[in-house]
Amino acid sequence: MNTNFSRLIGVFALAALVQSARAELKWEQTSVDLRPAFNDKQAVAHFKYENVGNTPIHFKSVHASCGCTTAQTQNEQVAPGQKGEITATFNIGGRTGTQVKTVTVQTDDPEPSTIVLTLKAVITPLLEFQPTLVYWQNGEEPKPKIITAKANKDAAVKKLDIASSTPDFTAKVDAGSAPNEFRISVQPRDTTKAVYATLTIKPDSPANTGNMFAAAARVMPPVPTSGTAITPSTKAAVSTVRHDLATPAPTAGSPRQ
Amino acid sequence: MKVSAVRQALLLIALALVPAIGEAIYFRDKVSWQSPDRSSEMVNLDQAQSWGANAIWVDARPDNEFERDHIPGAIPLNEDRWNELLPTLLAQWSLEKKIVVYCSSQSCNASREVARRLRDEAGLKEVFVLQGGWETWLKSKR
Image 1 (cartoon, each protein chain N blue to C red):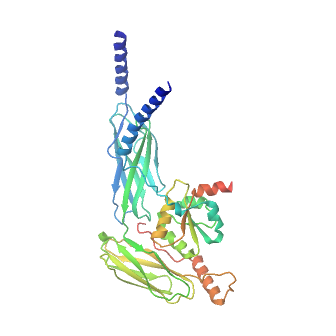
Image 2: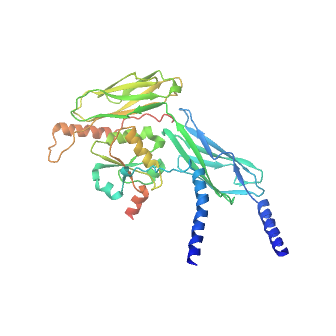
Image 3: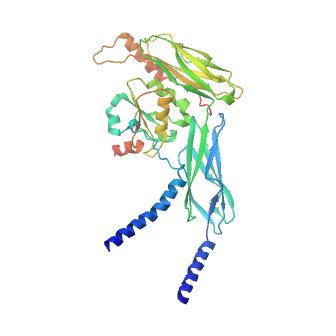
């Protein structure tokens, strides 16, 4: 009986010892939702922590899930009671929609040694196009085709200025069926020769800081069929496209760059 | 003896199930139960190479990785500089061409995202994602 009791006491003492020497990193939050403004180039999340244990904790590694995100710790070692944060910076670039990026943190804290921090950013660009490319088959009737541009409602876009990189296409802008929507009507002058044009679109908005956007229009080269002789018109069409590829039309910058 | 062993095994399984079910419920919003892979969009290297000149290879990796090395003839198109890089691809695309997008490895997501945008935003058809990405290409060349 006495032996059993002594053992029990021993187990409790050991448990108490282990408990008293614990290290524990407590996170304020491991998931952050961000809604960057349409002009923002980066979305930054702060993951705050505190060592609520009584032994120091060391960060072994901090690793972001993609090259578009960087993560930094303030300190490599966190003393008992010390607070700090890991900053995750997500470079938006030309991304749109909901983006989920993670940062994996490894520490010498035994339970748990690996923490996954999640940054979720909902990116609504200044302008969205549907589709970004309109094209005509060679010889197709040169009817206008529509690109719908949807402007971010916070940007208060009043109108769009559009210019084609070649005179082979005309483009005009009308109001769309919904608020903040525009209809871009694109029409080729001729569909017998292959041409490519970049349509540069500039939104007239007090919030716009000179950003321009791009869509594209093409008349496709004739589809080569086996045994078909290359006619002068086919040759001309192919050479036009090659010329366009060799000297690509100037493209609009990213909306956030 | 045998019955006892089976009983113990069942007991262990039952005990293991309790935390497993608890974890599944607790983390139900954090686990992706639906794979983002669309099997129809995936293409393996042999198949993509068999398309020959009818394939346009698109490199969805960051600029520095593309500059280091890439599949011969590949066009860079990553989301860091989407608006700047997209016109080059659109100028080369034609209806009979198949687009094969790749990123670093099987686990990267950039190629799927680029492929999705080419379909949804540019309206391109026949857009595929290379299984295994750049790693698979490198292995095939060794």
